[in-house]
Amino acid sequence: MRMLSVRNAVATSALLFGVATSAAAVDLEFYFPVAVGGKAADTIQALTDEYVAANSDVNIDAVYAGSYKDTVTKALTAARGGKPPQLSVILSVDMFTLIDEGIIMPFDELIKTDEDKAWLASFYPAFMENSQTGGKTYGIPFQRSTPVLYWNKEAFAEAGLDPEAPPANWQETIEMGKKLVKKDDSGNVSRWGVRIPSSGFPYWLFQGLTTQNDVTLANSDGNQTYFDDPKVVEALQYLVDLSQKHEVMAPGIIEWGATPKAFFEGQTAMMWTSTGNLTNVRANAPFDFGVGLLPANKRRGAPTGGGNFYIFEEASDEQKAAAFEFVKWITEPEQSAKWTIATGYVAPRADTWETDTMKAYTTDFPPALVARDQLEFAVAELSTYENQRVTAVFNDALAAAITGAKSAEEALAEAQKKADAILKDYR
Image (cartoon, rainbow, N blue to C red):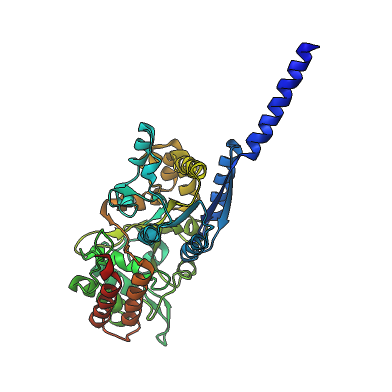
């Protein structure tokens, strides 16, 4: 009878312990943006569900917060209202804004073991440029990308061009673009040579041109811009000339979101867009297409882009620890491989590319390697304090030049003055 009582007591204790453990599960709210086509939302939900299923001590509520801009706005609003998420993927370039608001914490405070240190050191240096400042790491690369060149091989063949040889430089872009433009007898264009979007976040694709022209747009401290540098002016003039002088690109503002569809429908033979659109293009292009490095001028080059994981300062110690474990898990090679294959984003760690999963994928689909290889020439995306204000000023300057409202030189000189006024207090 006594042994039965003990067994009952043990069973009761175990039951109570189980209830207590369940009740004490750490709850995390996770804001996540969806900025491109493809399977991003489905994949992040599946990975989150997989983690929660294997870790009963944590609950993760993945909240899809809209675009990158929507997500950072919602995160800032929630934080100012005293109810921030514990974890979010937000643009890497918003790091200075998040630091300035005092709402994110450095990952360094959570790095305790040699294994943790090795994990942190495993990310590509090009992606860490927009993840670290002041000797601290505030963001962990996840949904990262570079812009790449996509081209319609059938259109190239039709125009008498080698379908396996995209333009290698600015001049070839013009020359090939002229051959690729298709007009009817009345001069109406049914297919343009190239499409470089100038809406949404035009500074990002334009930064491909400035990098190729061997000039940076801002310093690494986020408090000084170089918008009026002659090399920046030259790059903007080239962009304007693609439509106004050389007539290889449609005039006016070119929509970011409509660009893949225009490519699929044969309205442009080439396009610049994120590698994050790679899976979308593979699934929907009704023709054989190529993916290549952006064309060079003085050098090869492209900006990195996309989002980082951030952990919020207001989270409890238990939530911070739980969020950190989730970030480590989801950026491990196997999970990172699933994410890259599903979306086209660049796996941010070299060891991901060495997994059997990724080797099989890239053997079957070599274009997936292009963005990774372009990291050799990549620079940090434009990022400053008051980043949304500064980039808005710059985007307005680009639009003014593209639409012909101002000259490239005038528009950029005004943008620099406005940026100086915004950033002077941060120097």
